[in-house]
Image (cartoon, rainbow, N blue to C red):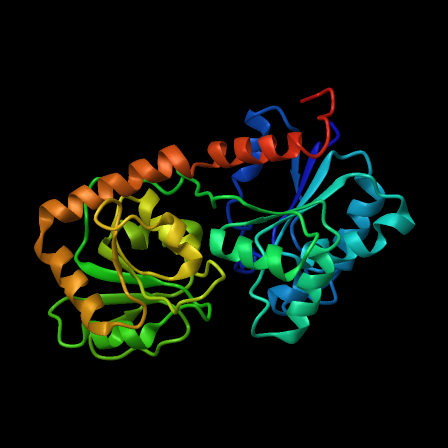
Length: 337
């Protein structure tokens, strides 16, 4: 069966010999009538950029050629981050490629000139661009006049990331990207009588701080399940850094303390689904962590509300339906949908 939607994930990290991380969006598209196909980044045997940063690995010339010449009857190609769309947009006219080319999530163009050039090239040529943050959406629309940029709330696999029915004993924080402000977190938890577990390569193991190894999606879910609270310390960035960790914690029903970063502000509802503190304020972060550790009722209330929010607003079915509505404004659907 030919695909109506071709999904191009970014350079998804995986262990040698293990299957790629879950990508349940394809199933969500199937449930609303599309035939969906996922084309992952190729390994080094076919991709000269394999093993490089996502900016390069996701370009994947072999994958791009496969889409351009063997998926010509698709309705749309959805590239997660801009790099997967680069060659498609550069060659679509020469190749006579008719499907919509859509970008979901755009990298920060402020701190890497090469990425800024790729973002500029792709945004000016894509049929639609979807950003996970309203602040970033406004910025991109102003910076790249003519780009078809819209706000699209991020999604989370609420069928996989689920509450465990209990809670553990440690404070958990997860993430490797440059949005994480671990210096403020370490200052906030210094001297607290509570175990702290980090899953990151950016902090060394030290007294009171355990570093969890990178593992499978199941290992990641187990880390959330065994945590008492989840903390997301962030710099105030326009790009929605930390959003995956935030929504995973929400879906697992965990009480969260998060920095008030512009990139994730759309998802933070202080005292409703989480506690929000100013970016870089170690004292406020420590007070919020202490409050949650000491107040069982608040912790349970916020965790339950976070789970409801994830289920009702951020599920993959809700996300796929929003994309379908956006597509309807771009082009009529194929008869199979």
